Length: 289
Image (cartoon, rainbow, N blue to C red):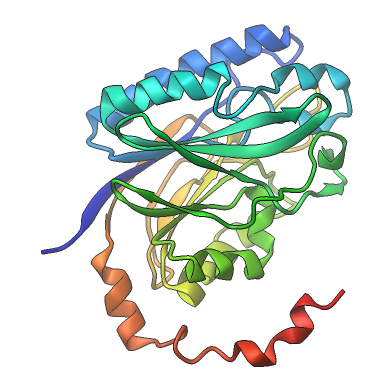
């Protein structure tokens, strides 16, 4: 009998001007996403992943300490607690990207993973932190992750998380596969012109190399006052053969739904024995300074 699970990816435009108070923006985006989670549940989704830093704008377009006000604890902060309630209500796994405070002044770009009964399973902290034009000043806001590449054993399957810029690094994607991931979710905020040509290249390649499903989420729209570019949406699921099986719109809110047959992973791995034929003893050069 096939292990088919239905997943959802939520991409959402900013619904409150970035010039509003941090608290007002956060509450508006949380309210919007709670409604979209409910819609995903009505469509039968068993798991859902939100976009990177879902309850705010992509504030890394500037360097401004006011955005530190978005930070909160995981799992003890209010957003994680709210999403635990939503997960239990809808019997759904929810992956929630949050600007995390570890200690005062020590912040991470993180994602909490919550199971269908509302239990908190753990978190992933973004490992690779960019700092570059145009307007990706992330080292001002985030420390590099220090929790490695955990895989979470959820009620719907084994889920790993990679966040945005991480997707440019195949090494961590391989670690997620070796750690048992069946589905890897990558919440992102990326703009046209900078990386769009890679959007449907790198992550299907990770899916093929590691023979798991990938859900790639990108926010849509243009965010002022920075206007660093168009967040081009196009969230999608791809299968272990690298084929895109569901895709969202470019510039509007969307909920991307797909059925994932997790038994396909075994089928593909029995055909292409990449894990069997690895030669880790020959790869030392990739971890040298």
